[in-house]
Structure formats: structure tokens, C-alpha cells
Image 1 (cartoon, rainbow, N blue to C red):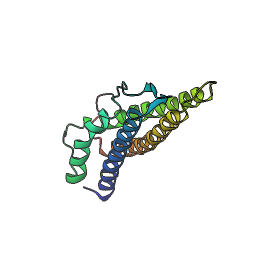
Image 2 (cartoon, rainbow, N blue to C red):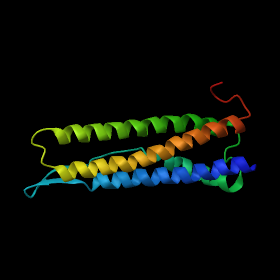
Image 3 (tube, rainbow, N blue to C red):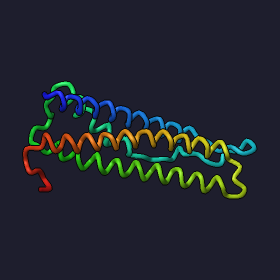
Length: 159
């Protein structure tokens, strides 16, 4: 494997792991966040159902194999294209989640009668952690674009 390709493969693996770790940390912060007012629990994110980490978990074995061997696990030329488009989609979804998370918690926190300051502060911290994952995923997306251009030998599915 060429030095440039190896650096891209290892960097992508590390960034995918950081993305997954930040998504998990964000979910843990949200799930453990509770709004308690005068001893009564009013709100919780325990019903939160998310699949935002599923793509990253799916990609990790492929990234580990590619970083360690320098070869694609699936060698028909479609995996770089899958990475290219998948990474773009997940980056956009995570960025949308960050924007919505900050916007909603700030607007609700500003509303009159909002006595759950700690609840919203923790939600903002979780969104901030997710922002770190979003930045990592954007960097993975850039690396997959570079890798797609250099590694793709076939015309692929879409072209």
C-alpha cells in the first residue's frame, strides 16, 4: 500500500472511532438527563431511539481491515463509492442533528417558566459532544473523497 493511501486508511479509522465514541457519549448524556422539579420527574430522553451510530459501527470492520492490510475487504470497486456517498449522507445527518439540538434547547430554555436549567445545559453538552463527532465525520468524508478518486478503478454504480 502506498504511503498516502496508508495514511488515509489509518486516519479514517481513527476518525471513525472518534465519531462513534462521540455519538455514544452524546447518547449516554441524553439518556441519563432528567428534568426533576420539586422531587417529581417531568422529562427524560430515555425514549430516545437513534440509529446515528449504526453506520459508523458498520464501517469499522471494513476500516480496520483496510488500515491493517491495505486491501479492501470487498474488492469489486464498489466499497470506495459506498464510503464516498455514505460518509456524505451521515455527515449531513449529524450536522442537522447538531443544528436542531442547539436550536431547540436554546429556544425552549429562553421560554418563560422554563425551570429546568440543568436539563437543558446537559442537553447542550450532549449536542456539543455530537458536534465533535460531526467534525470527525466531515473529515472522514473528505478522506473518503480523496480515497475514492485515487482508488476507484471502475465506473461504479452511479457512473
